[in-house]
Amino acid sequence: QTAAALSSLSPAELETFLESQRTAYADLQERGLTLDLTRGKPSVAQLDLSNELLELPRGHKDASGTDVRNYGGLSGIAELRAMFADLLWVEPEQVVAGGNSSLTMMHDCLVQLLLHGAPDSPRPWSQEETVKFVCPVPGYDRHFTMLASYGIEMLTVPMNEDGPDVAAVRELVKDPAVKGMWIVPTYANPSGSTCSQEVASELASMETAAPDFRIFWDNAYAFHHLTEDEAKSADIITLASGSGHPNRPIMFASTSKITFAGSGVAFLAASKANVDWYLGHQQFASIGPDKVNQLRHVQFFGSADGVREHMRKHREILGPKFAAVDSALSSALDGREVATWSKPTGGYFVNLDVLDGTASRVVELAKGAGIALTPAGASFPHGKDPRDRNIRLAPSFPVLAEVETAMAGVATCVLLAAAEKLAGVTG
Ligand code: PMP
Image (cartoon, rainbow, N blue to C red; front, side, top):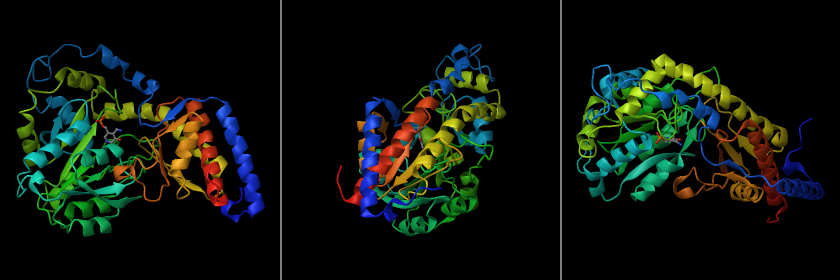
């Protein structure tokens, strides 16, 4: 039998329910937990999958005979570019294998656009009166804080199951001040949704008032499947060149959540013109990337299939944690009508939407019980969720038993906050 919707309870029943949740919460506090679901970090067991990297590389020459210990090779070593070109469905010359962080590559691109503009820019973006970006929400907090740090205005559109609300995007890009947009196309952070081929095709072909409009296509979770039903990322680069906007997308990816989060390899993929533009500026910032790290990644994976195979091992570790989140939320919240949450088939997050106006209270209650959650609103520009209902859950780092304990605790906090709200009492 499913539990009754909280909104259907009589005032007396609600009062009883509120009391029972206060007791449950007090019990939770008694346990003195210290659990952390704040960030999408790989767990120790996941990092251990790549320990062989610590013994690599064997030798110090790449396939062309270049000594990887020395300077040079700004675009990265050829075998690694070819491997990820295969995975990202582009040509090797469209890929740059860089340093350890794709976020840095995104930031480099943004800064170059601000300082210099792109070849198709009328002027550097910083010389525009205002620069605006389309931001699907909920989205990745670091995308938004990066834009905020440069005073770029953020215009939100809903992130749907099949990607950003394209009709809303199409309206916004009629403004020439709108220069770009973010998207996490596969297993989005935090919604878990994947941009469909149709939506990608519309984004690639839509008319934009800005001639130098850029899509920052952040494919951080392209290979991070949680089930056997593996989502395919839309091939944005081919779609864009096919519709006459070859320079519109710049794709980013990395092995941060494949090998070591702090010592992986990051990739940029785009039209040859965009790659030349990027390297043309990058040459003043670097003599070359860490090719020793790149070579050990080549040896560790062996091939594109080696990467796919490796991702299945991550899936075995992560899958049960995501199942635990769903089962803890379901068993406490089904029927109550106070929360909905995503059931992602990939990526690193569960998106939890609670009763409007209660997300901050849930996070505060959780903190009071020793469960650290990402701050409410973090998935929105300037950290402001207009409905105060969105919470991003990141279950990858704690061990399974901790995920189970933490999520049962979160469910208690969701119920208590909802009961307080419906009863009109503040906690
Ligand atoms: N993009 C997204 C969507 C992410 O979730 C993350 C990591 N949380 C990153 C980029 C960071 O990538 P990297 O480690 O390659 O800088």
